[in-house]
Length: 358
Ligand code: ATP
Image 1 (tube, rainbow, N blue to C red):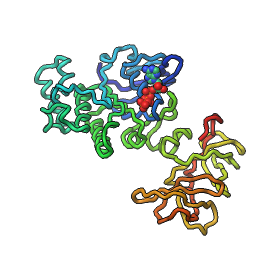
Image 2 (image 1 turned 180 degrees about the vertical axis):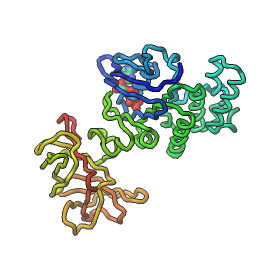
Image 3 (image 1 turned 180 degrees about the horizontal axis):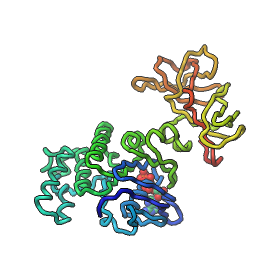
Image 4 (image 1 turned 120 degrees about the vertical axis):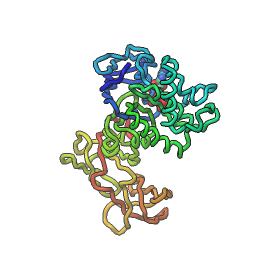
């Protein structure tokens, strides 16, 4: 199968028994894009990837490569490359032979197999390890072999399922950059599954944030990070302060909500009226500490954690609510402090299902 300009998933669903592991997935992937499927464990990311790969038949919807329907094709006819978290390398074959395997299976001329294999080995910087067996390599090196083996076939789409989850923190950071570099230099189209929001934000052109088998939001890293579509997405994106409150005043998208012994202003992220139950969401980075003599929101420091340049603190408000905040001042537990929320950064969501509130 050759390349494509667009890959479209239309109403894709996968049901197991009576449970929808994946429902109503609509997504258009443009050639050259790096898409991350992101969400908590069990949200349907791997199911979506396996449906794309052809490893799992759909129970609803269709998948199109330009104007050709491909969800009825077996995996090998789709021409996609796959990289899994357990690498799935052949243990008895050298790095070079692992990478050459797919090209040989295609019965390409020997010269071409050699040329493409050596180029792939260079690309993932494994020249000095090419004659070793996978068992003689570090986890990161094995992962690079798996990536080379998948990309040497010049697939129209590369599917990666949590490829970095077995690596230590430092190597994970290095491999993020490496995968992104390969994606760009080889002009790949990539769909990448992860539950790590930082990984997704740093690598992808667009994120598909999922929950309970359904898409919650599709957007650029900036969109998803600064304007989460629902409070569940906000939760997943590190808005650690999720406060179930009732709106005091609503004027356009300006909402006032009660907090501590005062009220604060937020930005409505949907239809709401005064008196409605809502969820106010704000990141710890946007909750700052000042000195206690300023009028406004006040609280008492409960927990202080060192986090590099800043301190992460937990502040108890007079009404018992606890806020996660950040400060570059030296503070101690027990201290009374004033709290300011960065204007525009408190997002207020309709709370939705009452049984499903933070
Ligand atoms: P993780 O990050 O833990 O891999 P995920 O987001 O990839 O999670 P999936 O593996 O796609 O989630 O699973 C989605 C839902 O479908 C889960 O509730 C899971 O239990 C269910 N599921 C997945 N595969 C099967 C199967 N073969 N039979 C029955 N249920 C399944």
